[in-house]
Length: 190
Image (cartoon, rainbow, N blue to C red):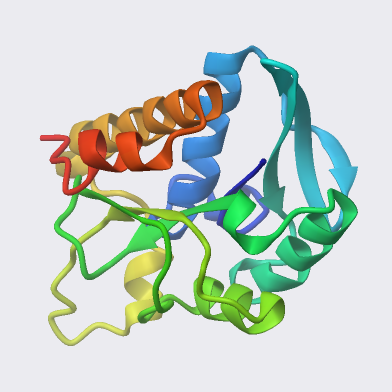
């Protein structure tokens, strides 16, 4: 199993909306008692075994728009199919604090997910999207996703990140993505 949180490396991008995936897998690693620090396949990873099954948790270091390069390498190195991975990322089209889980589908407007779909050649990739729902108000999408989480949203975002990490932990332990989807899909972390 491969769990991949999307984001951009470096202190400059910490606590930005676009780094929701990184923040979720950091929380997941803490729940599981591992550290994401080994370097492999253009990513920082942690490897653990749960009920005898290998799980790799990864944070691609290729920057968001080239995430597929690392994901393709990680899948190949671990002899996994796209459907054996879960990708976690921000979604501007979902209300802030909402989670949306799907087993497959298009990449939508997210460039990181678009690159993953292009690189691995499949849309059959489970994913957890963390809603950051912003009305652009004339701003460029890039400026929104690379901005820091505003003070008034910190609690709702933190709750969504915790809920996404809890969902992933349940999936890793029980291997039942359908059950996790039923429990957390359209989950509002408010």
